[in-house]
Length: 237
Image (cartoon, rainbow, N blue to C red; front, side, top):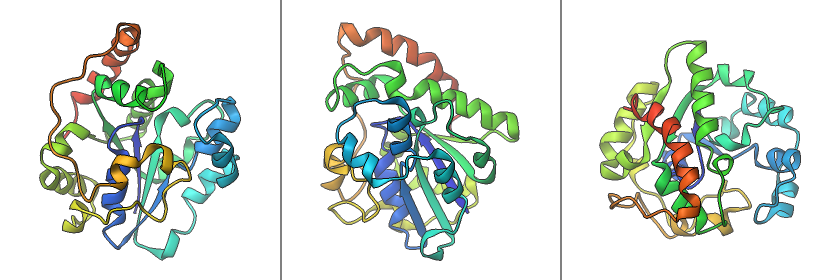
């Protein structure tokens, strides 16, 4: 089974990759389209040169690999994807061959977290518009895919992950509830910039507090993002 987990940045996505990676029966891949995205857009992200060097920049090659042999011949393959990487020119047909899941988070939390790492995020940066578009695409192919909210996972990791696994037809493993500190061997090269908090963790952080205050200059980003988030929030598990 191949699970494609679709989220924007700063969305519990790395912790969830660690959870699946700690099962023992599940290979993982970290943002395989990142280099292709940077090469195609010319965007100047932190560690751009290292990212471009670390992965193939051809999105077709990436897509073929995602459907190719699973690393270490494991029965499950967890693919962590960023929705903002799926720009025009990045193939989507391969998505028909995997189990697509959508990981959402309130845009105010995403914007506040992203802005702490990279200034002045735009709607395109946080991926929620692209996430809704990919969600609609998958819905057009067949049954509605599973949507899970990072807030709910942090409230009750065991219950949420057990329900997620049941929905996608994967046995739940209690090993998903913790992991060794220090990162994962399959982390992307960019991990040293973005993954500091999860590197220092050994499990999911506790429940989230009140929504953060968003600076006035970023309020238009939040306003534009909310309808896309609410569309998927209404059908979450």
